[in-house]
Length: 135
Image 1 (tube, rainbow, N blue to C red):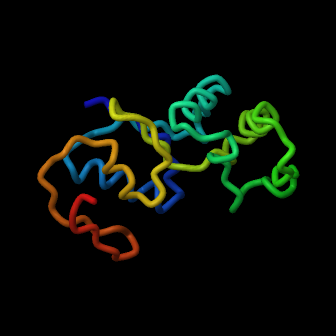
Image 2 (image 1 turned 30 degrees about the horizontal axis):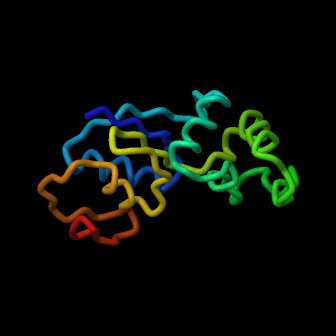
């Protein structure tokens, strides 16, 4: 199964998502999106495939969100895409792409919706929370 994860290794949720995918026996194609930012067109496509607006993928914490005035609800998707293109850290993570769809996987176990059913043994997140079964 082809799996792509837009990953930030500095993010605990992103690390947990990646490890959960691997725990289930899959090796995804990992794109560290801060090193290799997705194109504006690709971000727009991912957002469309998720069925959300561009605002739905914006990250506020630890980003220039406030400094750029991105809380202005009158900003168009085009303006938000401009901001993400200029500052890839604004794209929330992890975003996972599989044949089942595209999803912002927060919390990390949301990735299970994108993976085929497999035998599942408990998975322990970095913070000690145990994911015991598929939802």
